[in-house]
Image (tube, rainbow, N blue to C red; front, side, top):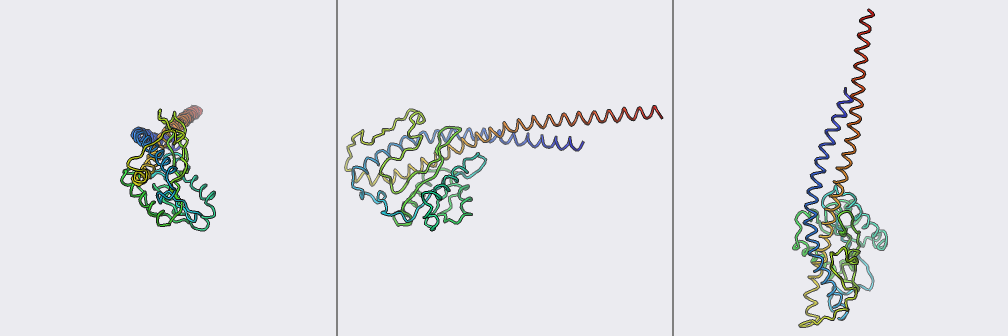
Length: 309
């Protein structure tokens, strides 16, 4: 009987867990719809302003803006790693962390070993992971996605820009998950500072179908712009706004990818719970049948013994 009771307790436990995973799936699906609306709204503006900035940079002198100027030799690096504040999203956080580690061990290996690479971790999971490593973390941005606002992103970009202008780091790159669709993401290492000379295109940017009909000009000079009052004045206004919206787009991409990954993970967990319940109920019925058969045998044996006595 103890075996039956243990199986029954396991069935109850799995059923309770399944209720939780099913509810989390529904919550993630609702958040994903809102996140998709935000990212599909932000993408066209971010892509267009990037195209204009690229055009301006090629047309003007490289020293037209300090955020354009690349160091002759990269001596220090800031790596911005965008993860989630919460888990239960499959391999979402692990994939970004692994991509960041590959970047540290690959192109930045010498600087990393020399202690000249710093991290800025957006999201709790990345911060908690890398704080156990021998690497300096700039700031504490845990809980960043609990209240996602453009103003918070502006403050973060200002800090990154100030460090670049003051020489704290010569190069800034961002590691994040780009939202492709509900079930998949692209792991991206995107140059942030200095503003790259050539347009950086992610897989989603290159795939017009994934952009819901948005067409990106492959050649930024395909359209001739007339700048008024002048290109330099427009550049001073657009560069900060460009950086704000690029990082804003990145955190929105990560947020949408997180919700999609969590919805899929919870859906898989719910399906796995169904399979586990099926096996447990089968085991329960077998154990119950075995117990009943044993009781019948004992009763029959006792009755025969009484007759013989």
